[in-house]
Length: 371
Ligand SMILES: Cc1ncc(C[n+]2csc(CCOP(=O)(O)OP(=O)(O)O)c2C)c(N)n1
Ligand SMILES: [Mg+2]
Image (tube, rainbow, N blue to C red; front, top):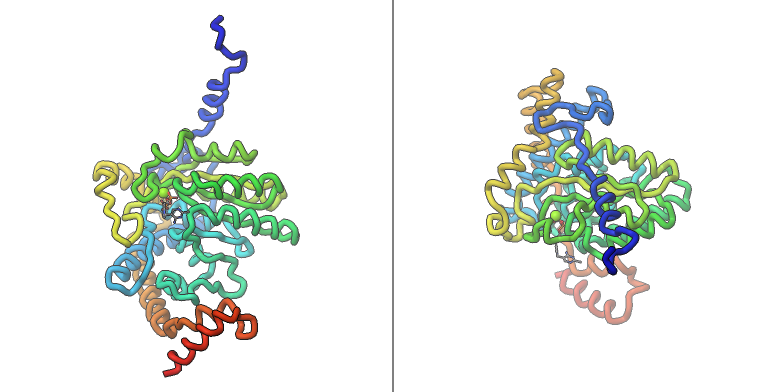
């Protein structure tokens, strides 16, 4: 026996854990159910509604890109390719749940009740875009990578202390799962057994950094294990797998069994944001094509068509409706008065509580703006 051979085989220990993280799939690329035992058995009506939301969201992405190019939107992070990860996970939630999104997660907050016009104002950096209507449990999309994971631990703890039957759900990316905030958030929520659902949308890139350079971990899901959190990796292009995983995680959280972590393996078809990155510099058209074949909408369409639940005319009606709603929402966003410098101060402080230096500036701008 060699002198430096340890009695405990730590390498084998790691391998055994990593091997357990197989990617769970329910609906394959051909639109066939491959894991009938895991099928969430959604009613026909619910299946159709899920498809409607995914198609609507794809159109919202296309229109947002073109509005951005026309200079009618500000910051925009494209979502095409991530509809199953975003919409099917949101579909497993209830109105009482809290969503803590990242900058790419605008579709989920829109389906949770944030008016589209307000999402557009958020894109423009207008403060009104960050003010969720009463009863819509959504925080403003986070720009600081991973910060929403810490906030989620706090919101979940708050729900727990108030005895609410609701969970806090958050999203980050493959890149976000390398942040300190990510680990702090999942650890804290697990230590307190708080009702949180942590979702990592692994879309393969953090801007131009590929997944394989991101971490030494074989899966991102396994990162939850160190925090003592039930964790799963699912096919993030499969709406049924994402729905099932999120529903189970939510059920567990409201039963008082603590947080869960879900890695959705997916792909963003577009650029990182509309601020000018060029994906052709860090990935190939072959990779794009390979992922295009896994498309969540194509496979769900096949599945629903085979069941006689979907056809071209239904899809066209959704597309028309989406275009109309988007048109009306951008018009509404345009009608909101432009924000003023004084707004930026007065939404933080009332006149009596303003620090003296801010009050001075407030008065200077109030004077200018009155002209
Ligand atoms: C703390 C912090 N560091 C760096 C950035 C700059 N940044 C913006 S997006 C991004 C990549 C994030 O990638 P990922 O988490 O995979 O999410 P994705 O954009 O792919 O959805 C980085 C590094 C930031 N916003 N915040
Ligand atoms: Mg990413």
